[in-house]
Image (tube, rainbow, N blue to C red; front, top):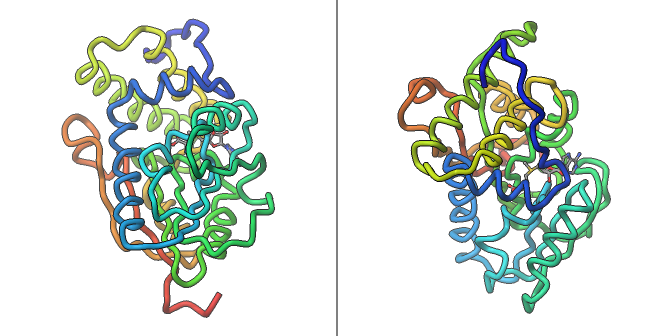
Length: 265
Ligand SMILES: C[S@@+](CC[C@H](N)C(=O)[O-])C[C@H]1O[C@@H](n2cnc3c(N)ncnc32)[C@H](O)[C@@H]1O
């Protein structure tokens, strides 16, 4: 991303499942986050029976890939707004003996089956919810989890910026994605130009304030706190070198639960 240069027309992964997965799988930072989130889900499932799992903003089903066939799962539901992604996910898992149920709808508004949810996966979900709905989103998660459920939040966290300054926000998004591109080129040197352009497309959505609404760590932590959730475990999975490594920006996985000190839900 060269500041000042006009970017050539970038390919778009929005509602295009193959391009979305190409972009994600090219990125070591993103796969480290999804894999860690999946490992945490497996650890939880290993200690559960007959569990109900919700993957909210499940997209193409990448975020459930590691645990979708875990024997402790009774019901697994994927919710997403994109029919194209859901069709892809449905096909991908159609051969499983206990395939996921996919529901198309909004993460906050859509009615869900009245299950007791043991685990809710939120991989890159919070940053797709518009800023003024983020707290509603986490409050919904808190309600769905009840007393005993666990939430897994996997998120890209931006370097701190001035919230009243659009240019400073763009600077933060660019800094984040320049580091993503550096990591990708370093660890996956054979990554094709198309995949690199798809990564630039993610950055452009963020800069344009469209489809991608990433925030800094203080905002996410504040929303978690206000929603009634509490963090049990926090794992920063990327980066461990480069410009972001000495900041609190990067990719995180949080394990959350309802705060038992709060009023009964
Ligand atoms: C970055 S993708 C994450 C997909 C998947 N969890 C993963 O980790 O690969 C974000 C997903 O959120 C979905 N999405 C965006 N806004 C949504 C909304 N309001 N309600 C439900 N899904 C939404 C998009 O369609 C997209 O599939």
